Length: 133
Image 1: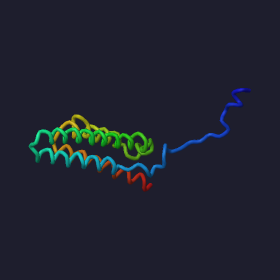
Image 2: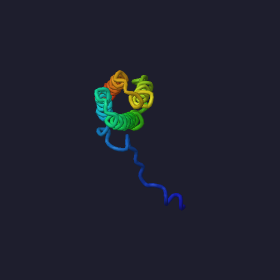
Image 3: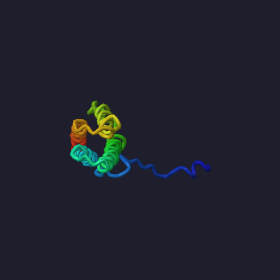
Image 4: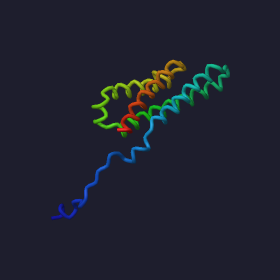
């Protein structure tokens, strides 16, 4: 009797925690562009204080790239997307690794920043294809 009284009268379900329009790979791209620009400024400046600040900010921005990618991966993309784009898992794996300590976060190699931007562009292409569907 008590269980019946406490049982919800209505069930609700949702596709995601907020309307999907709030997701956009541009957020990751903006931070990755910042990482690339900081790497260039770092290379062009010999002041050790400036370089230290540049590295700290670059690492923060690279962490934000990972955050934005993870939000897309864990909140936006669903199993049907994986069926349609089986390369998604590897693409996100590669992109977050390129943003991490072995990539743009931990180095000042502009080629890694370019590789990261290319991966984000691949993710964005798939993202916009899924949004159009």
